[in-house]
Image 1 (cartoon, rainbow, N blue to C red):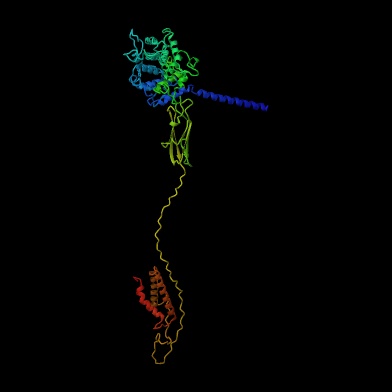
Image 2: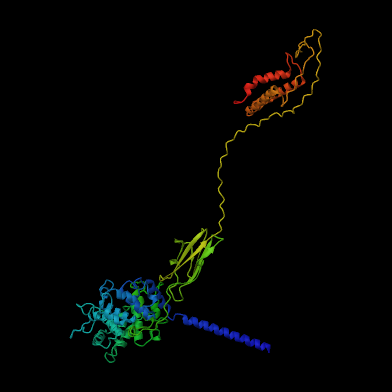
Length: 606
């Protein structure tokens, strides 16, 4: 029982997962653009050519872009078609239609007015046809000014840009005028009927229509004439006109499925677009077996003329007038003949995302690096499944406003750039992802390098060696011997001479070796009498001063030492009470010598 319950739960999970996957797939399928790439790439090209004034360079080109974009499900008044607050309709209203109709890029004024009227209807501003441009003019009135209404004239009802020659481009001009009147709802007026009647008379024996009387038939004017003539009231025209014109087109269809302007020439984008519309106007499908040549169809032939940037060539190798050519091609590829469009507009589709989309980018804004000076910039992107695709050669990478595109590795879906030795501080990088049409997606991010700062190791500083300072050798003073206390001398009793009663004072000493008699001299001491103290002080001062004065010189030290030794020897002899040769004791002689040198060694001021 438990096993059955487990299997039931597993089956339920599988069913739920399958349902969820199907729902997601259905969501993505519903979200995908229903328009073919041949159309979305053309829209890509339009967006890349739009100016800041909302237009596309000229009034004529802008009218064609409006027709092609609206036929493709776009609404040119939306934000997707607004640049700096201006859209294509704003551009038409801000400029002079009359100046444009007679300008260098227009060779047929009434055809220009006809397409301008159709573009106003396409943007759902038909009421502005009568107050169009700056200065304001009535576009329909201007168009009617080129119609011949002279009774009895062989060209009555026709439109021609030249009043002196009513046949100049009359077929071409009249067909476009009829389509403009149809768009504006003027198809019930006499002017409309007169134009239809005259145009029908211009069919040649081969079933085709020329641009003007005297010229051979061509596929472009034949296809436009078919559209115009299918609008005639029932029974107003010969029913054989349309089948004969159809046969002309079919006879001149090329092997690639396209149509030339003239028989035998190469596939022409204008002729092929007009032929697709003519087939639709006749109630047929251009992809049907009746209009296939092998596996090729008119639409495939037209798609083969599209360039990588999304624009359409008029002929192989002829890229003149790319905006009008692309506008007409998109209108035909979206199955919109001028018999119903722009009077009846197709439903609006979600605006085509024309700029490349950034899917991921790193470093993220505000990233902070604290342990490296190496940064890897990466990005992934796409131009959508139906765009012209990213053009790696046109993409750019900037770091701190310096172009770093060359060292970057840039592909169709991703790029990366390795930065090394990035200094500390705030840095900015910018990516410009560009598609083949020229649309640019810009993204800018900032990052900071903030590695921990370590004190730099100071460079060795040269410190000159100090000049040697002379240091005199230490003065070696002799260590004085301990002062010895003299041994008391034995007092000798002098011998009395019986010569007389007179007392005789003994002589301190006698020569000739006689014994010494008299009172012995006491040894000097620091606390002695005045004579002894004076002699001792003088000797100490002399020794101290002499040592101080001579301390700087070795010879002074030697002299001090010798004087000290001499004094010590004298003191030693004096302590013994000896009588020296020549008379007197050692002590008496020492006092005499010190007395003589007292003035020499006594410091000033004492």
